[in-house]
Image (cartoon, rainbow, N blue to C red; front, side, top):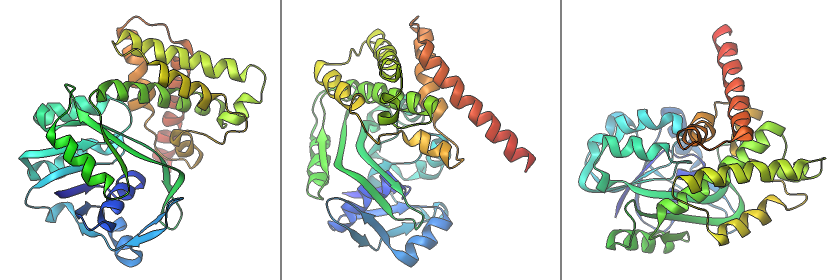
Length: 311
């Protein structure tokens, strides 16, 4: 398969890098600054599995041509509209668009721009980020990439994707119920992002303070209630897993949204917390702690914008 990876950040860079190391035909659509860095140092991945460097095939938006079998979209939500403008002309009739963005809002944006049959559901279960040298650092061993047809059920093309990723050392899995999976990830992400951003602390530190555990699970219950009202009640295995995740004392877990705040960057607050809170209102679900988390991050964004305007 001919693969186009949109962006070479933590997610796109990791999964695309694994494919490139396995000899797959992979091209990365990148900005000039990132292209210069990668041309100089290569695409470097630091992982519990294995450290490696590949020399990636890079392309700028103005030079993008032809068509691709797979377009892996790994940009942040706030960059999606610009990315779609750049890659739209290389989407062919048989192209699979596989987004691995957080949340759900991007699915509506993609399916409104392209044929719904061209867009897959997808999500990445991986903890990774870019270090100061531009290397992709995988913090924990998990590297699952899950995807499936939006309408549900198996298909030959998602089975082929699973084979491609698995052969590259990624835990690629085709799901017959990807929207349910994505809703559960949405619940998990909103809980971790919401509580760690409100508290400006890791899960372990929140658990260590008075009423911290209760706050975590109040927010988790609110997020689960929204998913249930939307028709995607979290399943027992997910509930059990997240109860363990959210109650592990000493856990260093914090959301990437909090890491964005800590370095003064733009966040996906509206795409994640804002979208879930809006869905809660539409479904008449009461979510006071989620609303507070949404307001907290929105206030940060407002202050950031004012500071940038005054700079």
